Image (cartoon, rainbow, N blue to C red; front, side, top):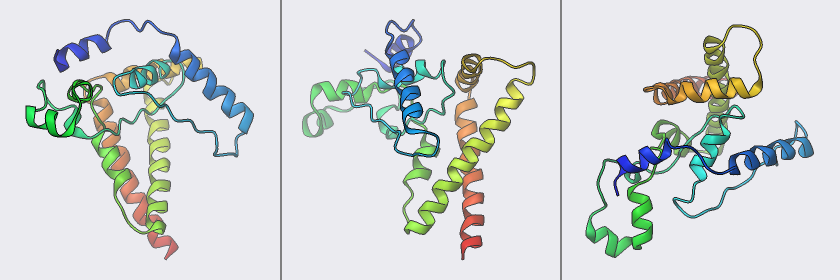
Length: 193
């Protein structure tokens, strides 16, 4: 089994309706908690390789999504297995299979930006700047993807998902978000000083 096989499997027809359940749960949570409440979050807890990323990817064809894969780079590099010593010392055989064949690849620019440390005041500014940049740039990109007549929410989600899957669009877009967030966070920090 290789990463190439895993990539091909990812592109096959999705045979579950878990993505629809996920969207339904998210919609009901938002309706129950209201627009001003930030406690409408959920954790997806499954073993590695059980389909969380694929479910979220399928859900992104129904609801607009900014999918961030924050896993370490080493889990997705190349078409090879982790060396035997690492298998014996650090991992079980099952963990090895799913770590060596992790897909989709991570979004290192996003992960690295979010994991940079610092004092709380700087972190808050950086996270606010990140969200500001993500939504601002997403809005601009969406307008460039569709400027015609009004379309359904699901059609917009589908267009966005297809856009992020094209070439280096996702990587380049996430790099733009991080760069814009860095500039904005500096502005926010200086303004609050």
